[in-house]
Length: 574
Image (cartoon, rainbow, N blue to C red; front, top):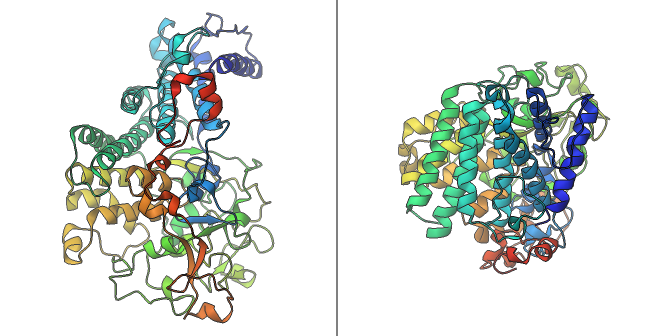
C-alpha cells in the first residue's frame, strides 16, 4: 500500500487546517503531540475536513466507480468501457489511494482521542471519525472485495503497510461496529445543517449491512437464491434493525409539498436558496436529505448539469429498459397492465404511468424551462408564455429532466445539494432487508416503508401488498427492486445493486436501447437502420463481455499498488 506518502500528506493537511484557523499551533510530522491535540476545539476542527469527502453529483453521472453511467440504464455519447465490460487493469486508481489516505486521517484522530482528558467534550468528532472510516472502508470493499483493514495510523516502517488483504467480512464487521458506536455519540438531530446525527449512522449501517448481506446471499446461493445462510441472515437483520431505528427516530421524512404535488419528487433535487420552484421552498424545507454534498451559491460543479443531463445536451441518455420499468398507475408492470398504451405515438408510453416517469424524463409535448435562454421568472402560469415544448426524438429518445434547473443561473453554477443518504433509501433498505431475511414481508412492513415511497407522488396507485402480488402473478422481490431502481435513478445505486444481487451478467449483457422507432410515430422523422428485431434504436450492442465473466463483479487493483505491495495479489480473472 502506498501509505508512506499518505502519512506525509496527513501532516500537510493538518498544517493547512491550523494555518487557516489562526490557531497558534506547531504541528509535528506525526501530528500526535499535545500541542495539536490539546483542546476539544482542535479535535472538532480536524474532524470538519471529513465532510468534504461526502460524494457529489459526479458519483451519480460522472465516470467513476459507482456511477449510473457504468450501469445498464444510462448511456453516453461515447461507450463506457466498464459498462461494456472492456475495462482493463489501470496503472493507478485514485479511488484506492484516496480512501486509504482518508482512513489514515480518521485513525489519527481516533489514536489521539484516548489521551484527551475530557472524553465527553470530544465524543462527536470521535463519532464522526468512526462514521467516515466506515464509509471509506465500505467503498473499498464495494470496489475490490478483500482489502486491508486499518484501525490505527501506521508508522512508516509498519509491516502492515506491506501485508496481505483482509477478508471482506472482517472489514464489513468493523464498519458495522464503527457505525453502531458512532450512533451512540452523535446528536439526535444535526447541530447545524449538513452535519451528522444518529440517523445518518443508522442509515449508512443499513446500507452497508444490506449490501453485504445480499452479496453473501446471492453470490453464495445464486441470483435466485431462496436460502439465507447464517452470515447473510446476521447482516440482513442488522440492516433491518438499523433502518428501523432510523425510521422510529422520526427526524427525517419524505419530501412532499401540496403546492408542488406530483412534482415534489423533481423539485426536491433542485432546491436552492434562490427562488427555484413555484412554492418558494429552499433547502431548509428539505426534510429528506440525511447527508448530502452541500453546495453554496457561487460554487462550481464539475459537470454542466442542466445542459448535459437534459434536452439541450443529451450527453447522458436514459434507456428503454428504464422507461419500461415504471409501473402503470394501476400498480402493474406494462406487460401485465391494461392501462399501458403501447408505443404507437411518442406520448403513448408515458400515459397512465408512475408519476416519477414524467418527473424524471421529459414527456413529448411537455412544457419545460432551462437555466438561461428560457428560465422561469414569475413562477406561475405566466412562465408558460416563454418556455420550451419538448418535441421528442434525438439521442435515445428518452431525455432526462431530473437535476435540470429552471431558474436563471450560469452553466455549472447550479447550487443544489447532492444526496448521499436520503430518507427514501432508509425506507427501501428496510423493505428489502425484511424481505430477504425470510423471503417474505408483511403488509404492515410494506406500509411502513416501500408504500410510503411509492405513494408519495402516486397517491392513487394501489399499494404493494402480498394479496396484490399473488393476484397478479408478480414477484415480491422484483417489485421491491423495481421500486429502488426507479426511485434512485442517477443517484449511483444501480450498478452496485446489480453486482450485489448477482444479476449483473444478465442485465449488463443486454443491448442498450432507445425508443421504439419502427411502426411508431418516430419512424416518419427518425432515419436509422440501427434497430433490433422489435424496431428499437440500438445505442450500444456487443455487450457479451458480462456473460460468464465473474471477474467484472470487482474492479482490479491498480498496478502501482501491487508494485508497492506484491502481497496484495490481484482479484480473480484480472
